[in-house]
Amino acid sequence: MQSGAALKAKLKAGAPCIGAWILTASADAVEILGFSGLDFVILDHEHGLGSIETASNQLRALKGSDCVGMLRVPANDRIYIKRALDAGVGGIMIPNVGTANEARDAVAACRYPPRGVRGAFGGMRAMDFGFDPAYYGRIEDELVIAAQIESSAAIDNIAGIGAVEGIDVLFIGPRDLSATLGKLNKFDDPAVASEIARAETAIKASGRVLGSTALSGKAAKEMTGRGYGFIVAGSDAVLLGNGVRAMLTDAR
Image (cartoon, rainbow, N blue to C red; front, side, top):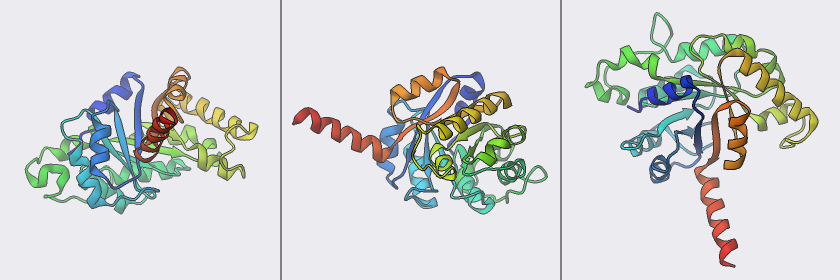
């Protein structure tokens, strides 16, 4: 399986961690990014093209690198979360968590009874198809759980969400947040900027790791100076496209 222990330790130590979205179903893209020096990648099953089957192959591609493979599920759905965990991810991201109860549901989906509701099986990939029975006893300590904050109502509830034991990262989703304000993609709009700042303050006060997206490496560096510890700076598709465009600009 892909252990999230190293990433979890870095986050707890306050070390800024940089990662990328994986929008394609390509294991090769994941392997390249895994050896690039990223701390983590997030297989995006909310907006990306992957399936549980392709996720398994992408996680295999990370073996041999220090990069941790996480997965963003389509919704706060305990069945999909179970399937992702059984595939062997090192972390889970839950979109659009708006209340403490929703955060508790997400954590419960990641834990076996009596602490949660995750269904148990004896031969899934996460436990090396049955050859690693110790998996059951350590997964809860190794798994990174990130909850996305994507609305003003969720910002109002950050203190309660952050108080849920098991949540490691509170991740601001700026695009969906801007959309809920009727200002999609207008990140410089005062109303959007104000809500992002309000979320930052509340997350820092909660004691959870502050996370969000960055449009560039320079933006990521600036964000670490403001207390961000979990930053997604681009995707496989965007990084490839931007690299080609930069080459063409130089060539022409």
